Length: 314
Ligand code: FDA
Image (tube, rainbow, N blue to C red; front, side, top):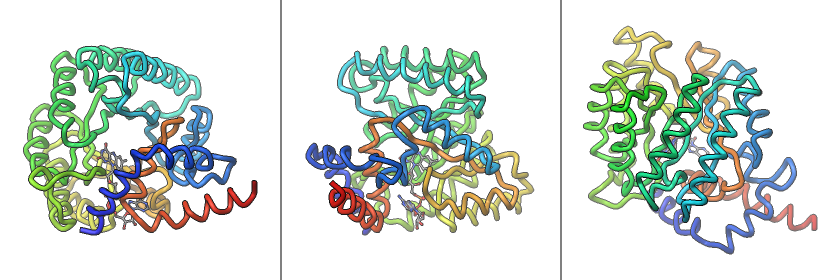
């Protein structure tokens, strides 16, 4: 309940231009900017540096060039070209070839056909270099269209692409069955957006129970699922099910967000599990950052301390 309220609160703050201005001014300033706890940096060089550190620690990564809900085709085209450049830079850097993106970043809200073309450009470039491209899942108005676009690409023969399902949505159990039928790779998450009653579960216990049920389904019948959570209870349920069913650790991976529960990331890696860290970077970090605050209001404390100490230095 508390989490639902805080998601709504931080969701509405995310629309504030004054706050965005303030945050942008201090958030990434210097090496100690408060947003750096969750964002690898504003440039691809910083993202590659973070990726190298993650790989040196025995984990893998997926790079996410931040951006969403672009307002024009020109912006969607710019985001697409930026992703093509990210692909080249990743190849040049010799790090793991895995990226995550959002369809509204490629123009979904403006023109679906152009968004699909943009996605195809990225998938084609990625396929040449053996990339895996994950389509992140946005809020519920985009669930069906995101899955439709995903299936369109799948039916056209693209296999270097996967999608995300959110356990907060009751529909996701059925969607997981469909993805298993296709043999498509799913990342399972709880869901980061404030969703209305009737569309999504409102109680954490329901979201968690659905997470466990879908995780089991994906582990037993899916294709290399990614169990993306920082919740020890979800991690335990996953490991227990895998052990009971004799599913080896190579058949799935855990995923966590950059800067969150680094202790668990290392622990799971030491225990022999596959761990992929989602590394967000880029100038458009504000909405992503606000979602991380909404998940855990305690995070606001370090932001306020960051702003106070930065503004005191001026
Ligand atoms: P839960 O919220 O119950 O948190 C469990 C514990 O994790 C907390 O007690 C705390 O210790 C820690 N924790 C969680 N969030 C934290 C935070 N912000 N700061 C500090 N500690 C925190 N969502 C979505 O809608 N679409 C998507 O495409 C994705 N993609 C994605 C990729 C990856 C790799 C991950 C890990 C997550 C996502 N998400 C996402 C976000 C996801 O839906 C969810 O909002 C967060 O993972 C938080 O939920 P948990 O499963 O961690 O559980």
